Length: 316
Image (cartoon, rainbow, N blue to C red; front, side, top):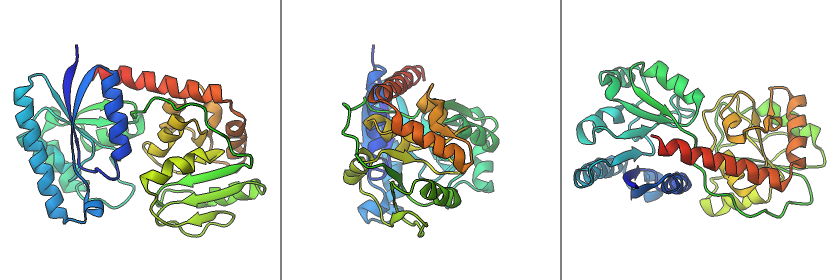
């Protein structure tokens, strides 16, 4: 028996792929998703006030639909106002779930400061949060000790057919620069792989010795092609909660290497050899394992991640 799930996505540009992943997993887990979606100001070119207004209208519309479909659930894919969203939801759309991707934002964001956390704590157990990794759970629990918090796997699409691997070793880093990116590690990796093509594509990156840096926003239409044409995609963070880029790599069949002790442990399952400690030597070992991994093993990683996601989202 299916049940209706309302998905409210206030980042129709940045979270377009994530929303597709979420809808796919919800359908796989016998839920019937209905999407209410609109673009963020950087895409729509409208004011932030207009964006927040659209968000409030979407919450009201979801509440009306909930009344017509008893037993339905609402999931918000991103906090428009940080932890203050929980207060708004308590009055307009009670019982809904807020997905908090970064409990401690990796870039400057509103609604995560001391006052916002204190205001959200007033709700106690009525605050309902979804996080996508154990690391995110630990931080969210510290911020909101009495909230109801569910840890669910990052949604993932069904795997694609085996891809054509590049003849030359191509190491890629994709996504926006943040302070937690490990520049020193990247310099060492480039020095350890002089025959490889090492590229960084993303907004805000400085020059990095040994890497071809393309400092720009990567549109959705181009991101999958960059992943397909890589031998390995690297996730060179000192700290992060989950990686949408890593999930897309697994969907497409491109090996991904990242730090051990991170959310990638759940995503990659038994292939711990694709995870590295903080030393350049261990990253070199993990990159070699990624280059040598078979297509069959990559499809197996994707299948297992997909099955786990569908099972756990079905139980929410």
